[in-house]
Image: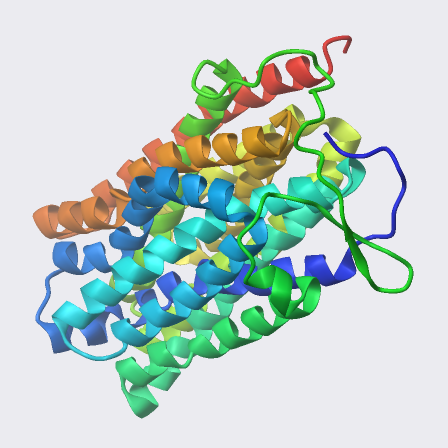
Length: 417
């Protein structure tokens, strides 16, 4: 429950959230544009290399319960700081060279990104007033995609100039910037202090005052539920469809452009970045549109865009720019709407953490299978038609479960409507 007292907007926290968003997807996406270079150097086939992208997502699923426990015990401030530092350590290990280093570093990086995935919605609910949750969530998911876009565009040229190890290592610069941003937002002492979840309210003088609202009862007067919450279950399935399609396309869109359109490695990597760039439109536009027409109708529009991407790639791959754009808008808007509903459904800080862990855990568990499965289907068929059909199943799952979950959640949140 948010305090009713009006307070200044926590700009420093928002900036820190955006900077952290840059490192929670970009390092994973960085390997997609240079998959051919890395596969050749490491001696891996398509299905094996798919694990490099799948492992972080698998970590999201497996580590999420432990990340939720860690956030609850250590506190959001400390957990966020550790997540940032852990992503940096994993990135350094991954760049050491060799198959073993790549896989170990990827697992370490994925584990700490998981902590970030869980804690950011908790921070948003804790520090952001209800009327600003949607736009802040959109800013956060935009940052996820901007970071992905930057790595998609720049990793291949860096790899060709300096080698893939240096190219991947270069993105630790974002980790340093994120760490500085978080330290500025909450202060070094708070960042490294283990403690309960307390909101930071900025005063006019730029100071912060911690207020503990964890004991305030829910305004709905009901007991918080997760697995028995039908809306949460449906949103878990929707997030699974979203994650499955997103990571499958992220991993193999450059390769599809190489094989189906005839692009070079560098051209495919930079061109596929439209999928990440367009997500900013969806991430920022979906919250604004939902305030006018509601979340269910907004999600229906997002679903149409999502469905058009695999259908378009299957029937008219030459128009890849249009399908990359519509898919990008959809993936940015889709994840934003799910996160907005998580924050709105949460009755208190603990409930927000558990809902976040449940929905992301289920979603990423299924999403983790996508890069490897799509790579295996490609190896088995020798083409991209059937893999694209499999991706279409993911968008259909998002559509059906997402619409049902959004309609039900909206009725729960506004029973008189």
